[in-house]
Every structure is written in C-alpha cells, then in structure tokens.
Length: 81
Length: 192
Ligand SMILES: [Zn+2]
Image (cartoon, each protein chain N blue to C red):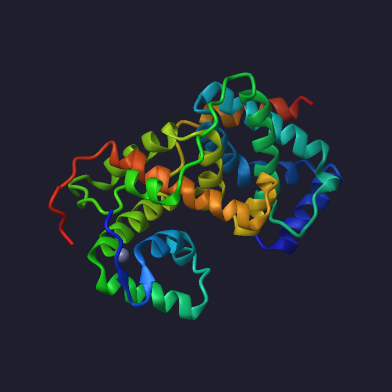
C-alpha cells in the first residue's frame, strides 16, 4: 500500500478516521480534512466508499426470518412462571 | 418509545401488570432474538438466550435505570446470557494486528469489488461475513450498527471505556470488509 500525503493527511491517518467519520464523531476541521484528502486520493476514495457501503448494508440488515415459533414458546414460558 | 415511556412501562412491569409484560415482549423480543441468533449462530441457542433474557429482565426489572435505553439494558442481559452459553465453546483470541495490515486485508489500496449483487444477495453475503468474525468483533457490530445503540450504550453493554469500544468497532468493521472481500471477485484495475 503506497502511502500518499494529500491535503495534509496521510492515507493511514484517513484509514484510522473512517469509522469516526461515518459515525459523525469528527470535529469539523478533522472532517473537512478527511473530505479534502478523499477528494484528492483515489485509493482512499475507493476504499472509503467500500467501507461506507459495507457499514450501510450492515445497518440496514433485515431481522432474521422464522422467529414465530420462538415468540410463542417465549410467551408460554413467561406465562407459566 | 421515549425514555419516559420506557420508564413507565418498566414501572408497570414491576407492578406485575400482565399487559405491560406483553408490551415489553412485543417491543423487544425481535431485537433480542436477532442479536442472540447472530451472536450465537444457532437458532435453538438463540431461543434459549431469548427466554433467559426476558426471565432475567422480569426478575430484575426494578434495577432498570433510565440513563440507558430499555433496548440497551435488554441486550446487555442477552449478551451476558449468550456469553454464558458460548463460554463452553473454544474461542480463538484474535492476534493483535496493525490497522494498516487490517486495512490491506479489507482491500485498502486494492481494486473495487465487482458490484453485481442485488440487495438480497448483499444481505446474505453480509450475514455470512458476520458469521466468520470472532464473537468480540461480531458483538460490537451487532450492538452498534445492527441494533443501533449509541456509542456510550454499546461501550456500557460491553463493559469497555468508550475509546476502547470505538477502536474495537473500527477494527471489527475492517475485518468485516475483509470477510466480504474474501467472498467477492475484484476488478484488479480498480474503477475509481
Ligand atoms: Zn489516501
């Protein structure tokens, strides 16, 4: 992995900040720094997009199917305490 | 449910009101089950964990404190139950790894993944990838990203300081991307 310095940030520094960036936990200057780096670095743009897409899919994962039986048995067990 | 509504619901559960217990179940049994299933990886085990969680929650309802959400409290109990069940199995501890090498495994500096999957296939692939992670990686992703607890609540559920939870979350996400990558064809030239 060839490290570049773009907009005053190295790629490894951006890698470290990706989660805080996605979670909205960066201060405005740090946020702007990440955005400026990503705008000028195709490696980080590509990886940032992949990382964000994965977290997005994870956050929108539907509930597992087939819980009805478990729900009935839960109710029965709690009802007979 | 607002924090006040949650507090009122729990007060009614403590008072022994059957309708309140039903409401508690209906609101949270799905989240507890989904969390338990993904953490334990087994439907029968998930069902046990779900039952033990609610039995324990009903016994200890008077100990619920409104600083956290009801969901966070229930998932904290569910995690404890799940770990008690999983402890019997062998956990291989993950080797400490630099963030850079985690990034490289996750495709940092590599080409773009072929993006030909529909939403359903992506979700199935995600479930598979989650299943490949170690339980500590999996649980932080389940609590924070899937169940949507706040950073503070996730840290509390895991018994970790906030900074340690965030570091684990970031590494777990990178390992997840690496697991997804192992499951996808890649365009070596990238498509940036
Ligand atoms: Zn970069």
